[in-house]
Image 1 (cartoon, rainbow, N blue to C red):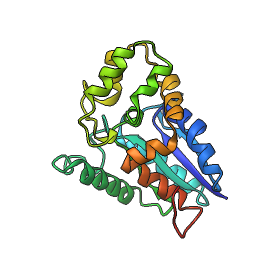
Image 2: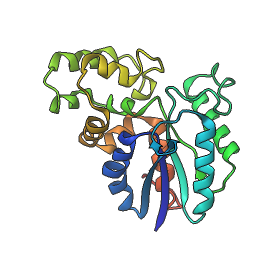
Image 3: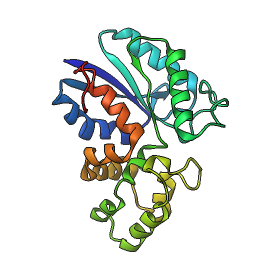
Image 4: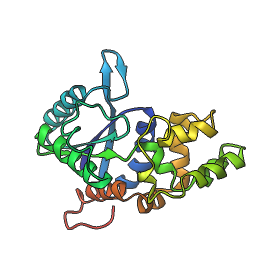
Length: 221
């Protein structure tokens, strides 16, 4: 049995881990334990500064050295005190994410830590199949337009990092009753982890890395 503490920004990601990722990985002997980042005493959720992330990740790595620790941190609205933040702004998306994750790994410096950013945020995964929104929302035209609006992106992970056009902002612009903690994980579950993984290469690589913890010889997670 392999234990992995998965540190997340919000209730949406926590529910997604519990209801979708946990069941999948448990079948392979990898058991995910989601934790919300604390933003202030008595409050949880969000990654408002890197120093708060750093302290909590280091503490979790050291208090349970027999387990692994990984993260689901949004690239969208990433705190600007994140290591290598400014230096990677000029890079293409793939190189920027790799550079940020490597800088995070180097700064944490714990052997049981696996860095991971979500590109650009959790809602990006839902663009694997926007038609699935139709199971929860009656506005078919809005959902069709959402798909047309994002059809030109290479992958759902390329839907951009902008306060007006990030994945969640696009959804809320046409479906103002979208409730992220409730609707997001349900839609992801309905799309299916296999389809999301195949559409989102960075997410897929992270899942494969976690899956390999129970199978050092490799193989699909």
